[in-house]
Structures are given as structure tokens and as C-alpha cells.
Amino acid sequence: MMQAAYKVLNSVFGYDQFRPPQDQVIETLLQGDDAFVLMPTGGGKSLCYQIPALVRDGVGIVISPLIALMQDQVDALTQAGVRAACMNSAMGNEHNYQVEQQALRGELDIIYIAPERLALQRCLDWLLQCRLSLFAIDEAHCVSQWGHDFRSDYLQLSVLQQVFPHVPRIALTATADNKTREEIMARLGLEQARVFVSGFDRPNIQYRITLKDNPKKQLLKFLQTEHQSHAGVVYCLSRKKVEATAQWLSEQGIHALPYHAGLDKSVRQCNQERFLREEGIVMVATIAFGMGIDKPDVRFVAHLDLPKSIEAYYQETGRAGRDGEPSTAWMAYGLEDVIKLKQMMAGSEANEQFKRIEQQKLNGMLGLAELTSCRRQTLIGYFGDTLAEPCGNCDNCLTPVQTWDGTDAARKALSCVYRTDQRFGVVHLINVLRGKITDKITQLNHHQVSTFGIGQDLSDGQWRSVFRQLVARGYLNVNFDYGQLLLSETSRALLRGEESLMLRVDTMQTKSSKGGSKKSKSVDIKEEDIDLWEALRACRKQLATEQGIPPFMIFHDATLKDMLDNKPDSLQAFGNISGVGKKKLEQYGQAFLDVLSGDKVI
Image (cartoon, rainbow, N blue to C red; front, top):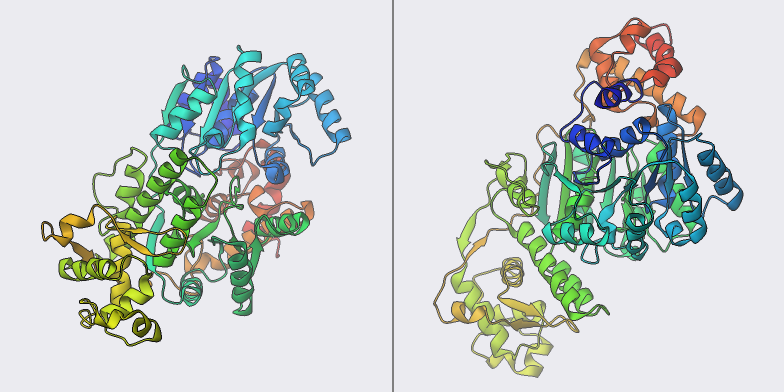
């Protein structure tokens, strides 16, 4: 059956080889066994279930939480010649009925459905009448209550094991630590499934984290100097900040759109479609945006606020560079992010165990942000992967972080917290340390405490750095109601002189990636080929516009680059280009050959 799988890979999707462990996953499903797949974004998870669904008899059912994107997924498969459809509450009863009938007649290869449909007995009765090739549970981390995208609908998916015990199942996700993996497999009844964990390293992504110092201007500089006219995503914590940032970027000449759950559904859908179909759109969004977005040429993901966990950070940054080309994960954060997130977590209605785990995950994210060594080694190490040598493609590798002996400053800061009765936030504490006479200090007689004026050797910014790092390392806790700083048990040893503390030297400049410029391109194109490259892109854009689909559904940039490098002069030669399957060869081959030969000017 693997011979059939290779034939489908080539004739339908236009590729000659699988990426490990795709072939092993596919062979497992073809044998009728279950699989659990943990593979990074852009690693090729979809082929792991699409190809077995095409090779095995029957229709493959893909459970996905992404109702807004189902039609795009179907369109992409249809472009490759796959008989695909989707069913969800947004499609209408008549449409869903027609899909059911097509499936019963054996006229479909793959159907995408939302998880809540499986709670309907009518849906189960219909599936029992169908010949099923497999069940694929996409975004499987949604079943985990400890995960970052929990969906209660996913808890119902254990019904698949009970009702369809002989239909192979595959669960797929890009982010899950060991605890989350165990929970996913237990909740879905996949304890006996073969587990495939692909490497987590995304070497084409450059990770950079900087401190907030007028973050909007920092973001603008990053976009203008490195990613002018590139597609990207900017994540913000609040809806209000999303709208304000999108508007401000638009005023600065950046083609930016907002996206959050509070916007009207039609506005969200329109903005999402523009992001997918147009080039150079910057989407400013909350975490409501991104899961399932298959746009391959997202050149950057920026965070204007600290994510809640390393899982969330990894998944969100992983939306950049799905095509394997150089991309950037840039983030600006500050002490206020830490305090805000800790307050939000403490104020939630979750039980204490859940809050405790969320705090641990936030502390892990803080540790990554404050790191002085290779970020990539720590990032992938969190998921149990290893990197033998520093990556050479993160800010700490490119510009090694300087450290200083902050023991004395830390003791002064902790003492000031104690002398002011652990009742105040950072601004007031810094004013006391630097000996500033304010109305508040005079009113509270804090100009008479022993720590008043003992920190005049450091600036306000340097003291903020000290306090931020003390919170990040657990020497100080945050009062979640008002943001006051409190001493932790850990601070005792430092105050008693029993340990020392090295702190990082904060620098505010944004480190530019190698070769970043206003005219930087998504892929490396020779100067003499730029005109032809743009002509190929224009041809792709015209074909996509005529059909109302995103340009990448015609061909990815990597396929255009292969055309440019090999310059095929016949349909047979064009069929050997990576990413050109049988249907796309028939549908688009001549149009691109005309551009390559100069017979067609776009």
C-alpha cells in the first residue's frame, strides 16, 4: 500500500519524497492502526491523514475546530484534484444534507466536520452508514484542559473509539508538553496508538525578544527596516490594544487589519480572507486568530505582550515561515506584562490546581524571555527535544547578552519592599530608592525609611530591570489585586547574604536580522531573475483572483522558485517541478510556461 501512497504523493501533491516521519505515520494508518502525531507547524501534518484517506477505501473524516477555515482547506484540496467537502453549522442544512448523500454514494474522499456534530445522534447514525477510511482529529491539543486552546467540544471525541472501534484514528498537534500529550491520548482513548514526535526545531525562524521602550515605535521600526510589504501577525493581549495598534500602524502606512472575537463576525471573516488572499497584509490580533491558518509566506510574527506559556508562544511564532524561508519571531515585553498576566490568572474562576499550573507555565515563559543563553535550545528543550550546539539564529546567539553582579542592587530592592511594608508597586519603590520627594512619599513618611535614597547610582530604567528580573526569578511575588510587590520565601537567602545574583544588562535597541532591509524579499532571488519572479507571482495572483482563492493555493513560493531555477520549457518538464501535481499541471501548466518563455506579459 505504500507504493500507492507514493503514487498519490507525486500525482496529487507533486512531491517525490516524504519528510520523516510522514511515511511511518501513513504506513501505520494504512495498516489500520491508530497514531498520535506531534509535529511542528509547517512540518506536513496534513499529508499524514490526507494520503491514507485517498489510498484506503471510503471517506476520511477530519475533525477540526476551525469552522471559519474549513472551506479554505476544502478549496486547497480541490485545487489538487481531491474530492473534498465540509460540514458545519455555518453551511446550512441543505448543503450539509447534500454532503451526507455524496458520502453515502462514495463520491467524496475527505470531509471536514466540527467536533460538536459528533454529539448529534443523527450524525453518528449517518457515519455508521458510510464506508470510513479513517478519523483525523486535528488540533488535538484542544482536548487538553491544561492546554492553551481548550475546547469542551473535543471532550466528546472519545465516542469515536466506542462507536467505530475498527476505523483507524490519528490525532495531530503542533504543541504539547509531556503532561498534555498524556492527557490527549487518555481522553481520546489512544493509549495503544503509535506515537510519532517530530523534531521541534524551526531553524528558519529567528527568535528575538526585547524590552519595551515605546513598543509601538519599536514595532514600526522592526516592520519598516525588516519586513516592509511582508505578510505577518502582531499579537496583543487585549481587544482594545488590537484595534488601537491596527489603526496606528495604518496611519503610519502599514497595511494593517484588526482581528478579535469582539468584532462582528462578517468583519472578522472579511479581514481573515483579505489576509489569506492579499499580499503584504499585517494582521493585528488576539490569540483568537491563527489556529489553522495555512498561509505559507507569513514572514514574521510579533508579540506586543508576553504570551501565557511557552506552548502558546511556540504555536503562535510557528505560524511564520511555514514555507521554510527565513522568518522572524519578534517580541517586546516588560514588567507590566508579568504583573497583568499574573493578575488575570489569579482572578480567573478556575480551580487552584489549574491556576497553579498556569502560573508554572507563565514562569516558564518568563524564563525564556529573561534567558541569557541560546533561546532555541531552551524553547525546544521544553518539549523534550535537544539541540547540541547554540543555534546561531536567535538574538542571544547573534549578540551575546552581558551580565552584571546585581546582588547588592537586588538586596536594596528587596529591603525597600520590606521597609515599605510590602504594600506598593514598582514606581513608588523606585522613587524611594532614588530619593525622590513626592507627595506620596512625604505623606507616608517614606523619606525617613532606611532605604530612602540608597539607590541613586541606578536610573529608573535600571531599577525597573532589577525589579522585573526579581519577579521573573521568583524573589518577589505580585499582589494580584493591586499589583503590589511582596517578598517570597526565596528572597530570604539573598537578603541574608547567603547567595549572589547575576542579572542581565538590558539593552533597548532592536537587533536586526542579517540582511534585513526595506526591500528584503520572501525568498532569495538573483538580481537578474527579479523581473521574471514578479511575473510568475503576478500570474499566480491573476489565476487566484479569478477563482476567489488565496494565491498560495495555486502554488507556494517554493514552487515558483523551483520554476525560476529550472525554467521548464515543456509540460513534461513543468510536471517535474516540486509541488506540481497532475491536476495543477493540466490546469496551470501552460499559463506559467507562457510567462517563463516570455510569451505572456502580466
